[in-house]
Length: 73
Image 1 (cartoon, one colour):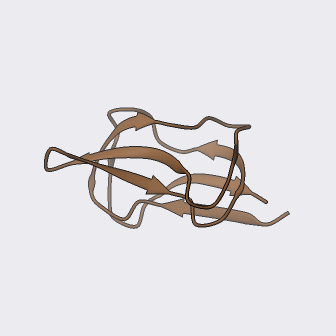
Image 2 (cartoon, rainbow, N blue to C red):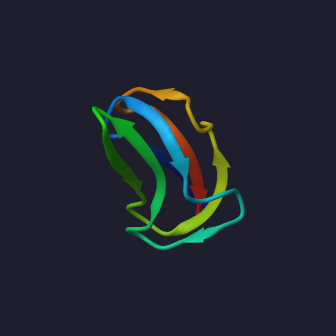
Image 3 (tube, rainbow, N blue to C red):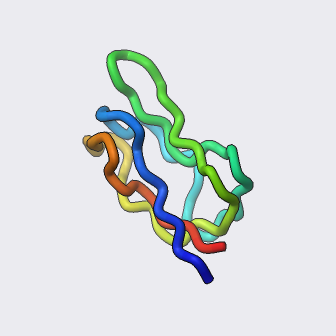
């Protein structure tokens, strides 16, 4: 199984988790919503897979490039 790291593309605050460990996602699905400058920015999966870990919680600060979740294909 390949490990797929999903990274935030922007600095902000985790607003909402849209998936949980065990969920199966397709490429293009929204995993997390990040609030930045009063805008909701989705963290979208590039590849499909099963969510293994969510590494952040709602209201956590995140940095650009930070790994926020791990998927397995």
